[in-house]
Image 1 (cartoon, rainbow, N blue to C red):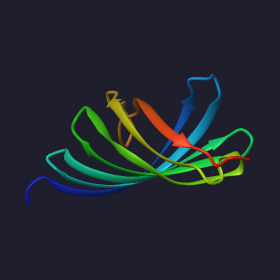
Image 2: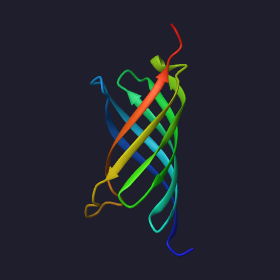
Image 3: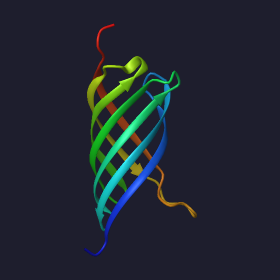
Length: 118
């Protein structure tokens, strides 16, 4: 199909949480696009300063200027062992700068989760 692209990417990000805590994230994404719009599946690992992680699997849609989707929390480590939950997120792409392979983005992710009792 004209304009059909399959993409495998990794993206890194810096996260600022509602409570002021910070974390880093790395996402591995598989996209299926026709003329720059389509679907994406991603696995995201959010790593906190104490080494604890939250791992999610996302399904979503992507267009020329934005993406959005839903997530399932599939695993946690450290203080997040036993975490269960879901999430939603969206992001907007910034213009591609000279020399960049793809755009940067800014987004919001909302996770709703429970942890087992201690």
